[in-house]
Length: 244
Image 1 (cartoon, rainbow, N blue to C red):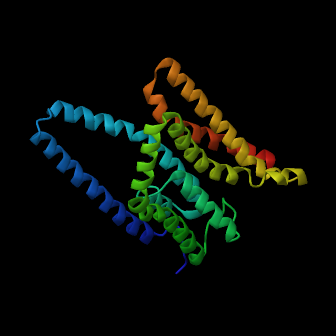
Image 2: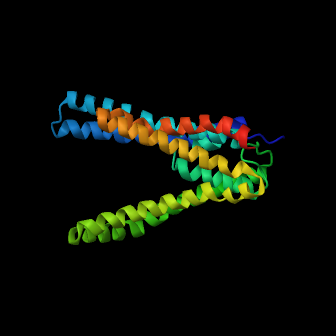
């Protein structure tokens, strides 16, 4: 039997897992609504909360959809759908998948045809993100407690430490963006493609932030990420043809 990244059995297996996650969500939603009624929260308040929450989940869902589309060429639809729907991060999954593809000798846009390569990519994406599940119960409370104590003693240094942690995380992804820039000095300009895409996405994000702040458009803040992602991907098409 020939292997396919879009095999029906993969969709069945992924569908079962996602159905179980959705069932948990519905279960806790029903429990929460019952508890809310017991403590006297009005039905109108519950309805407004549910509607507003549902609307604001559309923005991250669009970003996830963009990630699924970006990975579907190489990995099919089932695996990206699973990884980005259950426990996954858009920034992590794409980097992990592309790094593994490169290590196995595949181009980022090539379709995986070997079962062993597909399973390897699956394990890298899964195990890498699962580390967070293991570390959170053991270290999060201590780190958060230390940050709170630092913030209470010196608010300025608490903010600096918090921002430094965030910038440290971002720096890891910046290294991935700039790792092939040196090739431009040898006549290979493909390494500039992610730099151009990042720059365009950052400019679009900044514009969305400025408009949302000056015009007080709250929804634009939530949709800035998917808008910048889509714009970056759109720019990547002509830039890839130009620099490749």
